[in-house]
Length: 267
Image (cartoon, rainbow, N blue to C red):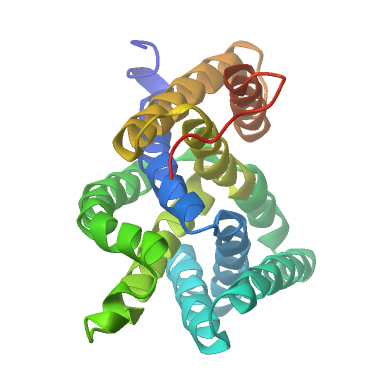
């Protein structure tokens, strides 16, 4: 650990560590809402928006956030239920296609596009670290503050309607928090590494934890442990970090869940 916190890799390690805490928590809420595919869909949209910003001479993070926020409101206009799941499929396919086309046709975009999908954590700078820490400090308390309302929306879908209250602020607020986290993750970890942290750790947590709170703790513990192990292995064997993280988390998830298949014990 001391090697990570000193020298060349201190900022990259701490940047990813902050995201390795917040992404599993976000992933638990996405899994609760049966929207885990959103982590991949919004990641692709953020990548496309970042490359579009490059073409316009704008900051990459601004383009990623703007594109993802636009997707949130498009999804809202499309409706709920099965239509919502269809929207994520559209975002995933469209975001990937636009990002690849921009990367193929813009100067410098191929290198940046490769970094957005595969990750550029080793090249993280102070700005990336500040963004990751800001996201963690702001988003985690807001997610916990929304927790009760999100649980009510899932377990008692008619609760707000029966109380004469709109539920759209809860859904839109959560979606906006989601795109902020995923935009930051895409710019630092890459699309697939961010998705693996948001999907695999919560998958194990939902399979093995006995309560919602325990599930959040398990997801974060697995995410941080897997991230640290992947960072060490990638450096030791001189391998790209993103694929290493995906393999470490996948192996850990399969080992924790058991070959016979997990039994869901929470919610």
